[in-house]
Image (cartoon, rainbow, N blue to C red; front, side):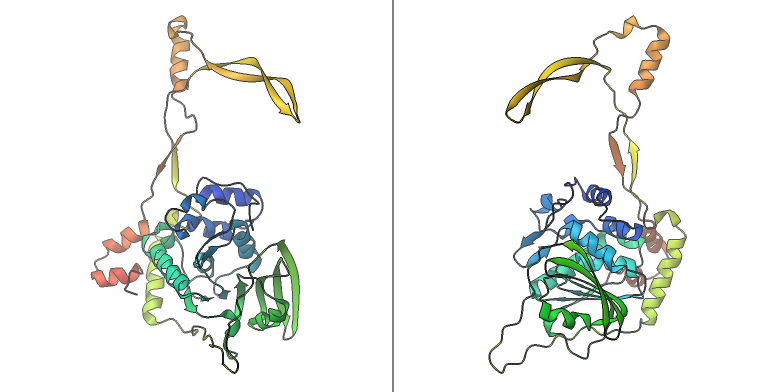
Length: 364
């Protein structure tokens, strides 16, 4: 599923295309998408496909098309402090974007069937925290992933404000998904080839809305022999933040407030690169185009470099030409911004172990 928008040259180009096609409609969703490079979740050798609006699969590793993730993020209506459950969390790409919006006082859990994919997701999460400048521009709710079949979640599990299921849900599993939701919560899942948004309006009442026609592989049901009990999935506990975590959050928040230009929504600085521009003149030429199976002559404009020597101009005209040649012609040079928050932390008179903690650098 995918292909609804043009391929991008890079992550920002992809997001521009998703915005233009109205898949991304809110600033907070745009900021989350720009903060996390989709290409970082691809295996080496496959990154060239990362910015196409197409799903990607390699072994058990799977990413949905960008237009799908965009619609999901918008439909979830995320806010700081909410609890989120990702059923079929895969690479953790979506869960990480969600974590940027719900913030440090939210809950961010994922259930994934394949152990190797959970390990892959944890590696990508660790790489994002340690190496991405974008991480330090947000207050983050770190995802916690567990291995298991999301159709075997323990019946006494806590409920969530927001839920997404990344696999096709059969009709007989619809109610199973709904009861994991808090009253007032939103569930987004593919059912009957429709990406559907379900809002729980009461103890036994829900409102449903179809968002987008989709095609998802169905949920995998756990195979077992006669009389064999399924492996129950225990979701991660919802715990109160420790004093250490609260201290880290507020120290980072204070330091971040001292560098307001380094916040979410700020983009990498781009400055014009000076380059000589050719002076061109237009001329009309005959060409031919195919219309059906016929060749039709058509007049088009072409540019050719003007060969007039500068000596033929007077001094004033020559000066104007030189100024014009030095103007920007669209080429850009990207200047990497300094990660202000990390620089501030490293400059503090603190033990290295405490600096590492403030930077979320820690042994797993």
